[in-house]
Image 1: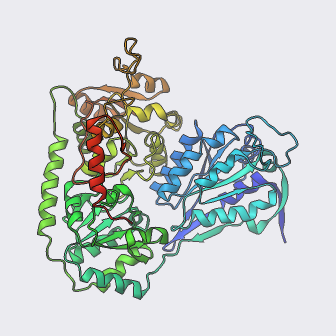
Image 2 (image 1 turned 30 degrees about the vertical axis):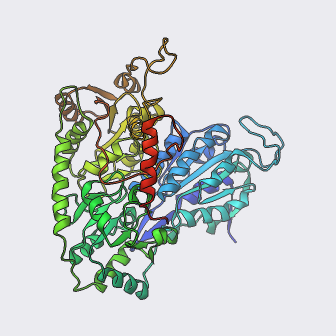
Image 3 (image 1 turned 135 degrees about the vertical axis):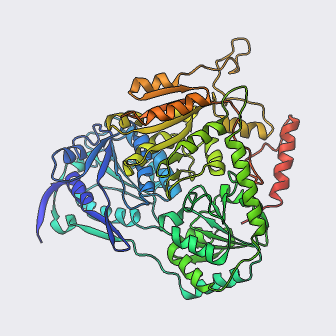
Length: 617
């Protein structure tokens, strides 16, 4: 057997450089870039392997480990899981910073390869810098924290273990039904140890993402249920996008006449103005989709996890409504006591379209009326004005109307995802990029970098609040470093407005959710609003910035930004509580059972009454 002597880190880099995926006969190189923040646990291991060359992988310099991993997650999502950016860190805090991003990737079913440094396998110098010691086991390190948020975890305690570990990592990363975060923890001494690796291990390897076909029996069972439906509804989830099933969904709905609603991940698969598109569904959905869903007798859920936001905590659908779940993942396909159709979304939709040939759902007048009424509501929110200042929905509408069809929008947390699922009108397919499986604050600022790396020819507009900016904005500097024009749309409402709204709606007075000075008279955080100048902060990083308080200033800034060669930040001062409310939905949160506050007591009674109307599983 022909071999080559390499360190474990050198072999890892060469292995990653030769991984490809194939879908529908087209090959895609799986790794072209790698993110890293170097420290003593990786700089002379993987860092050395990258710097000495002999590969085609481009190094991207992260500024914070969590943030670069969020950028990598967004990159893989925008690439429809056909390409990834692995992330390298040092040991200790550098490694732990990536745990949150691992949870985000796993929750959203996005492939993310994490390569944290680790303590010494030989244990000779223990305890080393940044090593947390666990008294019950020398074999335990902080990287064990990744076990709870990854679909595959391995620790390479010998250089030859790379061969099995790397293959199993790729197995998970390229499996549409079982993908998520993968962690290969690398003890820093092992990174530099050499081994005679078989050349065959380092050869070009193509991972075939073959489409899983439905059985004829599955198709017939689903078709029989749909034929008996009087008020059917399709839910379009992110799996439709990842399967490239856009046209299959269009053909199915148009041939049957069944309307469809969108999850956050499925929004933008088909045009917002398609005659059968009812818009967003669930807690952050609109009245059209939610009213039709509440009355539906059969739900065809395609490529969706059926999360609490999509189902309104299982309150949205009637108890007797039948759910048919068309999903590649068996774990998702049996949720809500559904009839499982375990297959690729495109193949399943095509099979159902053929099986239902001649069938036509003819009672769409109600859905059409709800759709038309909702679109008028969207127009109203987008043009709502106040003499007290700029409304959040008006600012969002101005940006939405300014954006071109190929421009991409990014979002994740706070009140803006609700406004965006309800109101935003995407352009071309796959230009609406929302991370809402984890609702990870900081994804917006950092994920925008990943989206721009994935689609450098598109303008990327990312929407977030001041709370998110304060949490995680380090990769703005990376955008400057890489000369990437990203549009950072910061909506400053002086706090965590979404959570304050939830707090107030559940009977609580505002507490700890607004950015105020501590009041020396009360000792509480109820003093004046802290005047934060985010434009000045971002300008210090090298961005072109705009401070915006009026419609005219926003419109002028959007125009000027397209003449800039660098990333831009719009510091948009919006009125607090100027977001959209909920529409015909309910969300279960843990309300206090015992309270001295009458409004809280009423909120608890309201929660109990809604629970009585939910499906239990």
